[in-house]
Image 1: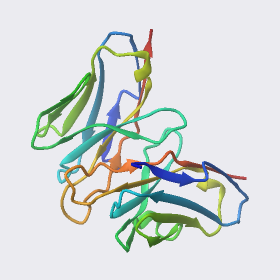
Image 2: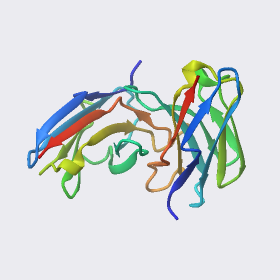
Image 3: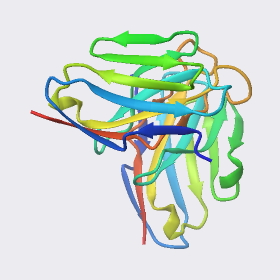
Image 4: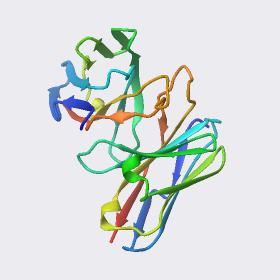
Length: 114
Length: 115
Protein backbone atom coordinates (compact mmCIF):
# COMPACT_ATOMS: atom_id res chain seq x y z
CA UNK A 1 0.00 0.00 0.00
CA UNK A 2 1.68 3.20 -1.20
CA UNK A 3 -0.79 5.73 0.11
CA UNK A 4 -0.99 8.21 2.92
CA UNK A 5 -4.25 7.90 4.83
CA UNK A 6 -5.91 10.68 6.73
CA UNK A 7 -8.79 10.50 9.18
CA UNK A 8 -11.33 11.86 9.26
CA UNK A 9 -11.93 13.33 5.79
CA UNK A 10 -14.21 15.99 7.22
CA UNK A 11 -14.21 17.43 10.72
CA UNK A 12 -16.58 19.91 12.30
CA UNK A 13 -15.35 21.61 15.45
CA UNK A 14 -16.63 24.28 17.81
CA UNK A 15 -14.63 27.37 18.64
CA UNK A 16 -12.53 26.76 21.71
CA UNK A 17 -12.65 22.97 21.46
CA UNK A 18 -9.68 20.72 20.75
CA UNK A 19 -9.14 19.00 17.41
CA UNK A 20 -7.04 15.93 16.68
CA UNK A 21 -6.29 14.81 13.13
CA UNK A 22 -4.69 11.49 12.27
CA UNK A 23 -2.35 10.44 9.47
CA UNK A 24 -0.79 7.08 8.67
CA UNK A 25 1.55 5.57 6.09
CA UNK A 26 2.99 2.09 5.67
CA UNK A 27 5.89 2.90 3.34
CA UNK A 28 8.40 3.21 6.19
CA UNK A 29 9.02 6.84 5.31
CA UNK A 30 11.20 8.55 7.90
CA UNK A 31 9.59 11.98 7.51
CA UNK A 32 5.96 13.03 7.91
CA UNK A 33 4.65 16.53 7.23
CA UNK A 34 1.54 18.55 7.98
CA UNK A 35 0.45 21.34 5.65
CA UNK A 36 -2.44 23.77 5.93
CA UNK A 37 -4.26 24.78 2.74
CA UNK A 38 -6.76 27.63 2.59
CA UNK A 39 -8.70 28.64 -0.54
CA UNK A 40 -6.63 30.64 -3.03
CA UNK A 41 -3.51 30.22 -0.92
CA UNK A 42 -0.44 28.07 -1.27
CA UNK A 43 -0.18 25.02 0.97
CA UNK A 44 1.73 26.12 4.07
CA UNK A 45 4.04 23.84 6.01
CA UNK A 46 3.09 23.70 9.69
CA UNK A 47 5.52 21.11 11.04
CA UNK A 48 7.27 17.87 10.22
CA UNK A 49 8.73 14.87 11.99
CA UNK A 50 12.05 13.51 10.86
CA UNK A 51 12.13 10.17 12.61
CA UNK A 52 11.29 11.13 16.21
CA UNK A 53 12.40 14.74 15.93
CA UNK A 54 9.65 17.34 15.64
CA UNK A 55 10.31 20.52 13.69
CA UNK A 56 7.72 23.29 13.87
CA UNK A 57 7.67 26.35 11.66
CA UNK A 58 8.36 29.56 13.57
CA UNK A 59 5.11 31.35 12.72
CA UNK A 60 2.89 28.43 13.73
CA UNK A 61 4.95 27.22 16.66
CA UNK A 62 2.40 27.84 19.38
CA UNK A 63 -0.72 26.98 17.40
CA UNK A 64 -0.17 23.32 16.57
CA UNK A 65 1.13 20.29 18.39
CA UNK A 66 1.97 16.91 16.99
CA UNK A 67 2.97 13.45 18.06
CA UNK A 68 4.43 10.46 16.29
CA UNK A 69 4.07 7.37 18.49
CA UNK A 70 5.62 5.15 15.82
CA UNK A 71 6.99 5.39 12.30
CA UNK A 72 3.58 4.91 10.69
CA UNK A 73 1.38 7.37 12.56
CA UNK A 74 1.42 11.11 13.05
CA UNK A 75 -1.20 13.37 14.58
CA UNK A 76 -1.92 17.08 14.41
CA UNK A 77 -3.43 18.61 17.52
CA UNK A 78 -5.12 21.95 17.97
CA UNK A 79 -5.69 22.72 21.63
CA UNK A 80 -8.37 25.39 21.17
CA UNK A 81 -9.78 25.81 17.70
CA UNK A 82 -10.47 29.28 16.36
CA UNK A 83 -12.33 30.31 13.22
CA UNK A 84 -8.99 30.91 11.50
CA UNK A 85 -8.19 27.21 11.73
CA UNK A 86 -10.83 26.36 9.16
CA UNK A 87 -8.83 24.89 6.27
CA UNK A 88 -7.77 21.71 4.53
CA UNK A 89 -5.04 19.89 6.42
CA UNK A 90 -2.74 17.80 4.28
CA UNK A 91 -0.45 15.12 5.61
CA UNK A 92 2.51 13.94 3.54
CA UNK A 93 5.42 11.57 3.95
CA UNK A 94 8.76 10.96 2.29
CA UNK A 95 12.20 9.49 2.77
CA UNK A 96 14.58 12.32 3.50
CA UNK A 97 17.66 12.23 1.36
CA UNK A 98 16.22 9.65 -0.99
CA UNK A 99 16.52 9.83 -4.75
CA UNK A 100 12.92 10.99 -5.04
CA UNK A 101 12.19 13.36 -2.22
CA UNK A 102 8.82 14.57 -3.41
CA UNK A 103 6.47 13.94 -0.50
CA UNK A 104 3.45 11.77 -1.06
CA UNK A 105 0.24 13.46 0.07
CA UNK A 106 -2.92 12.12 1.60
CA UNK A 107 -6.37 13.25 0.52
CA UNK A 108 -6.61 15.75 3.34
CA UNK A 109 -8.94 16.52 6.22
CA UNK A 110 -11.28 19.45 5.73
CA UNK A 111 -11.73 21.18 9.08
CA UNK A 112 -14.60 23.58 9.60
CA UNK A 113 -14.65 25.55 12.85
CA UNK A 114 -17.99 27.06 13.87
CA UNK B 1 7.64 37.19 1.24
CA UNK B 2 6.40 34.78 -1.35
CA UNK B 3 9.30 32.61 -2.43
CA UNK B 4 7.57 30.66 -5.18
CA UNK B 5 5.34 32.45 -7.65
CA UNK B 6 3.08 30.95 -10.27
CA UNK B 7 1.37 32.46 -13.27
CA UNK B 8 -1.18 32.68 -14.61
CA UNK B 9 -3.60 32.23 -11.72
CA UNK B 10 -5.96 30.46 -14.12
CA UNK B 11 -5.65 29.26 -17.67
CA UNK B 12 -8.20 28.00 -20.18
CA UNK B 13 -7.19 26.10 -23.30
CA UNK B 14 -8.97 24.03 -25.91
CA UNK B 15 -8.54 20.30 -26.14
CA UNK B 16 -5.41 19.50 -28.15
CA UNK B 17 -3.64 22.80 -27.40
CA UNK B 18 -0.47 23.20 -25.34
CA UNK B 19 -0.93 24.66 -21.87
CA UNK B 20 2.05 26.55 -20.43
CA UNK B 21 2.22 27.11 -16.68
CA UNK B 22 4.95 29.33 -15.27
CA UNK B 23 6.82 29.32 -11.99
CA UNK B 24 9.63 31.40 -10.51
CA UNK B 25 11.51 31.28 -7.24
CA UNK B 26 13.80 33.45 -5.17
CA UNK B 27 15.83 31.19 -2.90
CA UNK B 28 18.99 30.10 -4.67
CA UNK B 29 19.34 27.10 -2.32
CA UNK B 30 16.30 25.49 -3.94
CA UNK B 31 17.46 22.71 -6.23
CA UNK B 32 14.52 20.35 -6.54
CA UNK B 33 11.21 21.30 -8.13
CA UNK B 34 8.23 18.95 -8.10
CA UNK B 35 4.96 19.82 -9.77
CA UNK B 36 1.77 18.53 -8.19
CA UNK B 37 -1.64 18.05 -9.78
CA UNK B 38 -4.70 18.37 -7.61
CA UNK B 39 -8.27 17.48 -8.47
CA UNK B 40 -11.19 18.78 -6.36
CA UNK B 41 -11.65 16.76 -3.18
CA UNK B 42 -8.29 15.04 -3.50
CA UNK B 43 -4.81 15.65 -2.18
CA UNK B 44 -1.98 16.89 -4.43
CA UNK B 45 -0.40 14.14 -6.51
CA UNK B 46 3.14 14.30 -7.82
CA UNK B 47 3.06 14.85 -11.58
CA UNK B 48 6.68 15.42 -12.60
CA UNK B 49 9.81 16.83 -10.98
CA UNK B 50 13.19 18.24 -11.98
CA UNK B 51 16.52 18.84 -10.30
CA UNK B 52 18.49 22.01 -10.91
CA UNK B 53 21.28 20.13 -12.70
CA UNK B 54 18.87 19.56 -15.61
CA UNK B 55 17.24 22.07 -17.90
CA UNK B 56 14.51 19.80 -19.20
CA UNK B 57 12.49 16.86 -17.95
CA UNK B 58 9.93 15.07 -20.06
CA UNK B 59 7.28 12.53 -19.13
CA UNK B 60 4.75 11.80 -21.81
CA UNK B 61 2.73 14.94 -22.52
CA UNK B 62 4.29 16.79 -19.57
CA UNK B 63 7.60 18.67 -19.88
CA UNK B 64 9.40 20.92 -17.42
CA UNK B 65 11.75 23.56 -18.80
CA UNK B 66 14.16 24.97 -16.21
CA UNK B 67 16.30 28.14 -16.36
CA UNK B 68 18.59 28.23 -13.35
CA UNK B 69 20.11 31.60 -14.17
CA UNK B 70 16.73 33.31 -14.26
CA UNK B 71 15.26 31.12 -11.48
CA UNK B 72 12.33 30.26 -13.68
CA UNK B 73 10.65 27.08 -14.79
CA UNK B 74 7.60 26.17 -16.79
CA UNK B 75 5.37 23.16 -17.19
CA UNK B 76 4.19 22.42 -20.71
CA UNK B 77 1.21 20.15 -21.22
CA UNK B 78 0.94 19.18 -24.86
CA UNK B 79 -2.24 17.83 -26.49
CA UNK B 80 -4.26 18.99 -23.47
CA UNK B 81 -7.20 16.79 -22.51
CA UNK B 82 -10.34 17.66 -20.53
CA UNK B 83 -9.09 15.22 -17.89
CA UNK B 84 -6.09 17.51 -17.35
CA UNK B 85 -8.40 20.14 -15.84
CA UNK B 86 -7.04 20.58 -12.33
CA UNK B 87 -4.97 22.86 -10.12
CA UNK B 88 -1.23 22.62 -10.68
CA UNK B 89 1.18 23.53 -7.92
CA UNK B 90 4.83 24.34 -8.46
CA UNK B 91 6.93 23.55 -5.39
CA UNK B 92 10.58 23.93 -4.45
CA UNK B 93 12.91 22.41 -1.92
CA UNK B 94 16.56 21.87 -1.13
CA UNK B 95 18.01 18.38 -1.46
CA UNK B 96 20.60 18.93 1.26
CA UNK B 97 20.88 20.82 4.51
CA UNK B 98 18.48 21.45 7.37
CA UNK B 99 15.60 22.24 5.02
CA UNK B 100 15.85 19.01 3.04
CA UNK B 101 12.45 17.84 1.93
CA UNK B 102 10.56 20.94 3.08
CA UNK B 103 8.43 22.11 0.19
CA UNK B 104 7.62 25.74 -0.52
CA UNK B 105 4.55 25.92 -2.74
CA UNK B 106 3.24 28.46 -5.18
CA UNK B 107 -0.42 29.47 -5.07
CA UNK B 108 -1.25 27.20 -7.97
CA UNK B 109 -2.60 27.58 -11.49
CA UNK B 110 -6.15 26.45 -12.23
CA UNK B 111 -6.20 24.81 -15.65
CA UNK B 112 -9.42 24.28 -17.56
CA UNK B 113 -9.37 22.32 -20.80
CA UNK B 114 -12.47 22.76 -22.94
CA UNK B 115 -13.47 19.90 -25.26
